[in-house]
Length: 613
Image 1 (cartoon, rainbow, N blue to C red):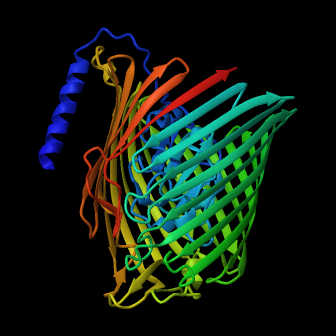
Image 2: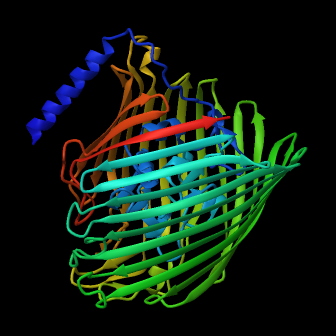
Image 3: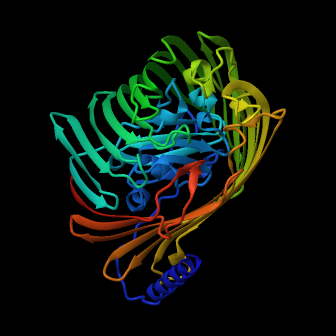
């Protein structure tokens, strides 16, 4: 196996060198805007060159070239993201950021929380297709000042495309293990209202026993401008049925699960002069059906239904000193469950933030928020971000703030022979800080940062002996330190004849110290101590494109691994033919203990696009 890997690497190296030596091509190359507006790092949008936070943006141009088929797989391509996949092609995955647990990272869809009060295992059950995503913004570090509970390791905001005119797309894909799927999307204007609709279906067979997937989904959106108001409606639905082999217990290899997610959001933005008001009303429903042993469906069978209603109002005013933003929000969370029983809680929050106009070379954002739950006390979480622009290309920045997470209903009430919840849990509380530097010139970028996170009353599933059941408890205080560095460049800036038009390198290292008092940790002490990644986009002869992604992880208590993915594509007018090769070297690895990931998986497909402004 190792000889084959070396031979494949040598072949790829020779191929790229051969391509680089051919300078006669005049193919149009993609460009990468470097001073875009980021909406996730503060209440008011900030251009990337003035950010006082570490933010990673995955743009539409990158999404279209990524060797992935689902939104969750796409998120896992960012440095500092630990995507813990149980099932491929979007079946099920947990998201962690900067060594956090999967419960300590928050996912948003257009700024709306996708977290599920039952468990964090469900927050990547997203009612949105990959073709509808315009970009993904990843805010690293504390985020409760902006978004409330769970925003400890960071925040992932998935932003959907804003259509104009007539736009249509059809995707068809097939591959190993009986994979077949397709997506169709259409956007049309009618009577001053822009309508868009997407439908998706994906089926895959077993790569190990009880690992099949049947996914279907759809979404509808409408937007219109009425005077000083911009109105939008977005609804979505996703249904997944999959074999859950050893997902939650390696004792039972024939688990099965089905999840259904429904979502609707109505938003209004009013702007006049120096004032802007954003109002949102959203609803999210989720159904989870779980069978421990599909050969004996009645042996252990759970049904959980959650409903979350949330309304938020943002008020913003510009002045001579900058932009002042205030917000108020209210949420209602309910669960009906065969094992967790029926529960209901309310939450409310207020925030105030000031974005100061640059003072000399400094950009300052200061804010404070307060959140309360019907089950816990009202708490205040301040934060401040400061950036110093040393030149047009170089900035230094620092940030500090508090974050929190309230227990999920699974943390509180789950009861089985192997897992015991704890209704007396307290919310987690975390304070973090970060220092960093970022340099950019044209399309060449370099970033480095160091962060520290200090948590108390951290919630984990723990036990004293391997034969004991797992129990939730506020088990420990936790100190986490990390270092991240990224380099991205367009090689054509140095070598005009280069066929490579983007290369990105990333490296991170994390160290956590906790006192478990001899207890065994299920989640908190399992994190990626080292991560490295390489992305490379280059052209091939014949107007073809190749995109490589290589990731390496060294996880505490587990075997380290490296995985290489490749996308090859060739356009023919409105049609693009492509091939995906996931896990090119056919490596054996696990992202979660006892759950083997697929070997080499080859897929092929086509995209047909039509756009008329």
